Image 1 (cartoon, rainbow, N blue to C red):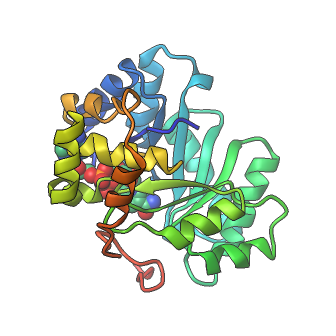
Image 2: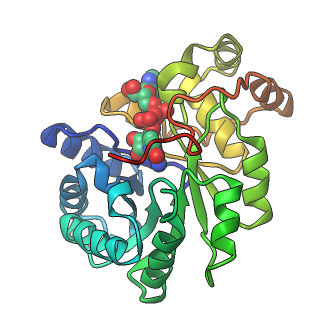
Length: 262
Ligand code: NAD
């Protein structure tokens, strides 16, 4: 799974989405993160086909939305996503949020899709350790990925350690804190000292922590900027300085208090 992919949440303008995804693929992105909720699976599939890049070179993630959860419902939602994307398999399929009383069955359906080779990697999103433990008790194939909100203001050290212990790769959603962390003073200072932008420093911090990122942008130079993080290294002191800006502050919902009833 590539370390940097393009997140496409809120890319609902068709032309804008097609253009952003095409540009990303052209400059070397090989992973796209969408979801049934984002209402752009059709555009993601179209951009992939138009890119001329071989299907097996691109890593496509999509997710089952909350009101489609449960075993049979998830299998049906998967069929719909596959059709919209116009693909014959999906690389990574995720439970979008752990809907109470349903997420274990949802994951069991994802496990079946994996066994039937319709997905390459089974995973979850927004699962805390206690959700994962409930899945461990029922699953034969454990989730290989947990996609969680993670950025310097919400460093999730405990959950990252838990995932590492169980061989679960971590993907950071809102890796830039939805733009909020870009103005952080410590990060800005490090950025000027290494001659990179704040976004690049944050994405590099994730990378050196072995975390996959899916930054979102429709701005062409930012899409390019977010991929240029492999030509410099943060010192352990700089990594520690960034670790210390953590405030346990979310830009999104906490899975434990999220209201799923809509
Ligand atoms: P993000 O941290 O990627 O921030 C996006 C914001 O930062 C946008 O306003 C963008 O214009 C700006 N930005 C991006 N690159 C920049 C740069 N180089 N310089 C300055 N500004 C820049 O936040 P996000 O969009 O919330 O998250 C990224 C992706 O994560 C989404 O697109 C989606 O795919 C995924 N996501 C998943 C979940 C989930 O529940 N699993 C929830 C939210 C988002």
